[in-house]
Amino acid sequence: MNNLFKYLGICILIIGLLILAIPTFTASLTNSILLIGLGVVILGYLTHIILGKRVE
Image 1 (tube, rainbow, N blue to C red):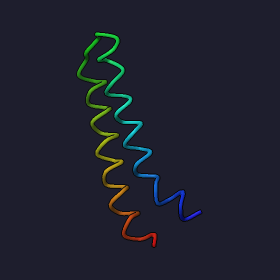
Image 2 (image 1 turned 135 degrees about the horizontal axis):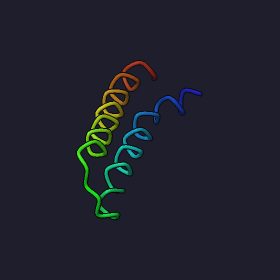
Image 3 (image 1 turned 45 degrees about the horizontal axis):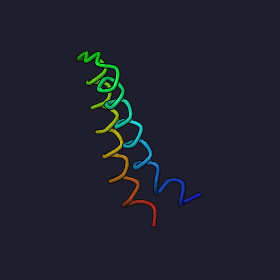
């Protein structure tokens, strides 16, 4: 179970990157999709830092 929590932040980061990649391939750049992707990337980054310190 600890291994799952250890990589949860990385998984969230990859989901955020996929959200950012979708508008690039569909050529429909909107600020709302880009802001959601940015928020998910920041959330994944912070999750990775916080869980990395707690899970050993």
